[in-house]
Length: 340
Ligand code: ADP
Ligand code: MN
Ligand code: MN
Ligand code: MN
Ligand code: MN
Image (cartoon, helix red, strand yellow):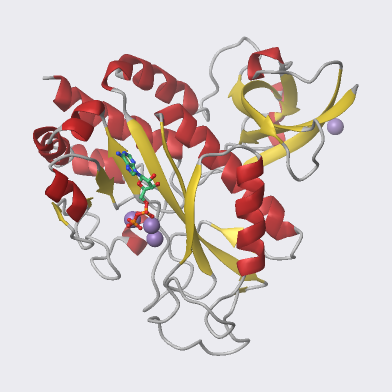
């Protein structure tokens, strides 16, 4: 048979990489795993991944799932970018996560990432009037009704498509600013949560395209008294799921020495625009953790304190964070401390 595989990869755009994709027609029995799918090539000079004189780059399939938009046997195929000699391309942040997640695999780290995003129609967020501003924030978060909710048809379509693709979506909600929404992926192992979040992002852009709306991960889409968009990263290891001492060890490890800066500088471009200390954020340059505290860098959910086990939430990552990088940093820092 003949079927379509949409090869998706992450480009080299600075400071925030973009998703790219193109379609490969395949013949034969549909591939059962990414390893059965052929490598492919692309023009790296058009994606900030090569100079024109030696522009070929390699797409190596690493994750595949059904393509519910095209349907049938068609596939979505997420790829790593390699150089033609098989080495890891400098834009490929997944390779480093592969190493770290293998090194600490015995601690069984898992993540749930809350992806916030904002719909735009032209130059304005969806639901913003042509001129001026909508009513101030207060009623939009988890709201209902045409006066408060904008884009639910797209959000519902995206949710259905993610579930049909088999992605581990755990929920959705309307956010604090009009046109702003969230979906959560996980809890899943580091590579799985990051691969599936990238594919869910691609599906978000793709579904919104059919509504002539764009989705953005801009961490501060509207300046002033409007919430930014983050990617709260919920994290646990087996020890954290079993006891409170490990929860505290993890929180402390993220605050040690140069760790707060080492993390925050890789938590998405424009971090200081969003982590101002206002709008349910902690200042980007001051690390803190606390129970139930949505003004802290890292929150221990109240239920976790009651149960004396569970997970922590790093509230700092921007919506535009690279999930391969935030999960690598958190596993590296927390699991190193927990190993002692
Ligand atoms: P919030 O109250 O901050 O809005 P959400 O419900 O949006 O929280 O997201 C919480 C996320 O934490 C979900 O993706 C959920 O799957 C994830 N999560 C739950 N338990 C764990 C755990 N033990 N380890 C890691 N992530 C977890
Ligand atoms: Mn061509
Ligand atoms: Mn949430
Ligand atoms: Mn949220
Ligand atoms: Mn949260």
